[in-house]
Length: 114
Image (cartoon, rainbow, N blue to C red; front, side, top):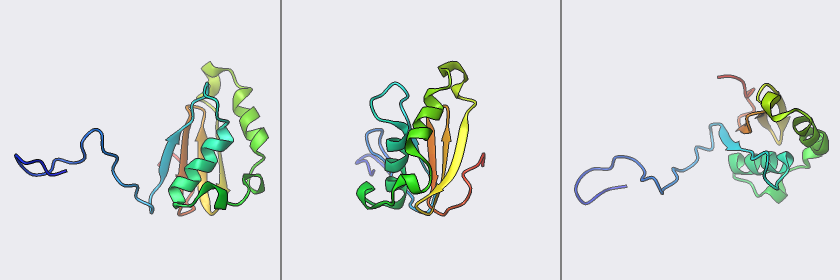
């Protein structure tokens, strides 16, 4: 953003910087929300790969979506942050953390601790 009074100091708070398609994409799952975790995973992969979610392969080819949802729902909220699962889906490395963080790396590199 270029302000009339001087040079740009980065995006304003209401602007979203463009996603770097080459790097990891992170989204957050709301455990108490209406969408299942599998939906958050699919939409995260779609965003990371700039692909319509309906054009992705079936998530079931990588992981059983119902089991993924059930795994995290079965853990009490106070212990959920210790749970983490990683898998490959649509050529992307996906890491789901019990904190609700869903990290998708479109390069297929393992989505680890960094």
